[in-house]
Image (cartoon, rainbow over all chains, first blue to last red; front, side, top):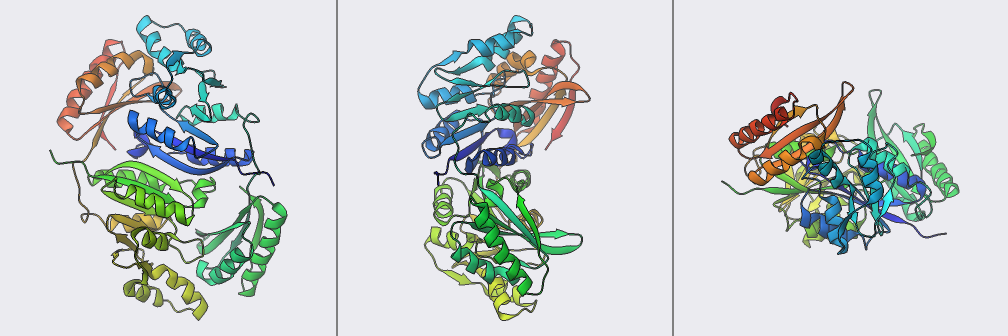
Length: 251
Length: 251
């Protein structure tokens, strides 16, 4: 089996840390990258503070195959991600002619254009990440992919990377819904987890249609193995007198 | 002015990293703690893996005044947060009689009760975090507060801490809505940020009622200073021919 390809997500922005903005980028990145065979193993939310961004990027870029950042690449003074990435890599910040050309398509007074051209600055040696919305592109520096924070734009940029990244085995999920408490099947789950160390068995309580239940999620790279473990879990739930529902492969 | 009191949030759970579950705990913790005068400066999402949890807790608990964790304190094999906190502090994991008593109120067969009693295990020396939903309590070990991952339960546990934590000055936000592009006011914002270094000025583009605009958010501990800077920003927006809307103090 090929080796896992891993990623770290960095959400850069005071507005997430203050709670003003509800992050939705982590889950989108996790599911999309996961579907491509890139496993998000770690996420951080950090403020728009230069030394924190620089140090964090340098800490994680060696520890994961890929780093994906969102936020801080707009035209205002608090958009400092590009210069921080340049500092992290010890290179100059330069104006990219392709991004600049895209920005210049829309005319503007000199001072406004100067602010917009902040978005054309990339670390020397970076390649571009396309922006299918038509706005300024993001960029990649080595294994660090730098994208917008606005979810619609981030999602467009990410979609442009499909098929262009190194990937490993995809981790699939197989879910079983059971209207039973977690504790009632805890022993059985624990025994099955010990028996099948190549999968991860998770249990997530829920409340639905006025009833408490537990979603049992088996994760692993072999769908055959997931089916085997799912059948064992179905049997364990039936053994305590409940009727589980096999949801099959899920996100 | 009293000193800032800071916090780090750790979201523990494979289900967030896989994208299966959309996190909503970060924003709730950030706004609630922020309102109490505790600033969330850093968040991490980490998997249910022992050495990662132990190392992360030990890395951040010295760097922030408080650490708040969510997730991994249920009754199943993948709920390992309590034992990881004990390992991080180098103490035993012991059964807390108050939590155990609460669990024993609901009768259950021996094996089910044994699983449920996993939730009574806390690091030796921990104090309890009440759970107003009536379920098993969370706990605090030194400056590390350990709570459930299910948002409703986490929110209940957090609410029980109101007034019991050390706090610093509250960071307020004052917002101005302007139907203008970020670039058009970027220079003015940058100059105002340089002039008023005791506040943070952020600009967040939005699309609403079929129009693009920018929400300008000024953050700082002095509401008088926020009003002063807000008036300057209002004037700057008016100077480019737009009509800004003063939203006043906002979350």
